[in-house]
Image (cartoon, rainbow, N blue to C red; front, side):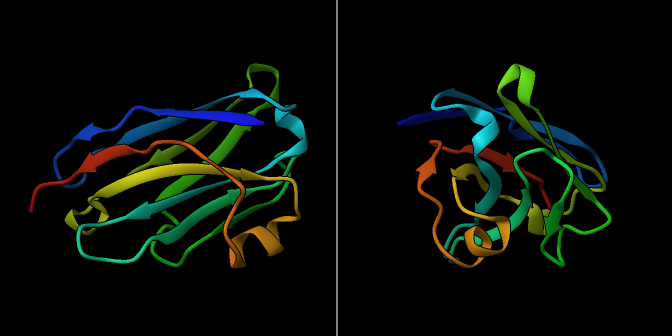
Amino acid sequence: QVQLVESGGGLVQAGGSLRLSCAASGRSFSTLTMTWFRQAPGKEREFVAAISRKGDSTYYAASAKGRFTIFRDNAKNTMYLQMNSLRPEDTAVYSCAGDSREPVVVISTTPTYWGQGTQVTVPG
């Protein structure tokens, strides 16, 4: 079993930055592909970014590419999402999720382990 806890959300003005963290406990963190998803009010949950077990491969949704950076520190059992140039349309609950499968599979399915989510609000 894996427990995931997000932190770092908040309210930030358009054009600002936030760094989200996802702390893992339980199963060995380094065996998991890790991802970020988000869900805005009234919308379906969408993929944001993913990172391979070793952190050597990353994947981004078109909306995140060039503005967000996913990275991980396996020694600290923690994954991060650095978000720059934030826009009102980035407002959502951001959740981290992990899975033992390869990134290309995890991105197209539903990851196994989920955190509770953290709210990011960018006023319009």
